[in-house]
Image (tube, rainbow, N blue to C red; front, side, top):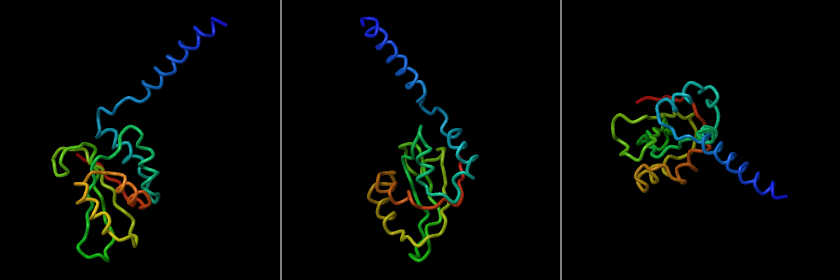
Amino acid sequence: MKMYFKIFPVAFLLCLHVFVKAQKPVTDTLAYLKKFETNKEKYIGKPFSLLLKDMTQMQPKMAKSDINEDPGVPLQSTMFRFSEKDISSANQSTLIIRWKADTVPTTPIEFFEQEHNYRFTVSERNFFEKKIIKDIVVYR
């Protein structure tokens, strides 16, 4: 019985070590995002929630949409950034999602962007989750 009490902590620490090693932080954001661009066929025609679910190591921090003045024109694209820097800063890894046209009004996202200073919060996530991806482009 005493042997089990010695083996259990060692096995637990070994499993914990393996788990921590598996969740390495992303050191090259551009290379990480390029994987999604390379495999974009998996995401085109699917909801944005699938892409977000697969982004296990890094999630968007900022989002800015290409909103047209005419409320009848659907949302064309959204630029996602993965750092807390100002949304207009240069030399940031950027993921651009082009959306399939839909009838969802852009008014909520306009409000969220102004209210949250382009941060990708739960409100933005909820707005974009059901939108269908038309294309994915990554650049720096």
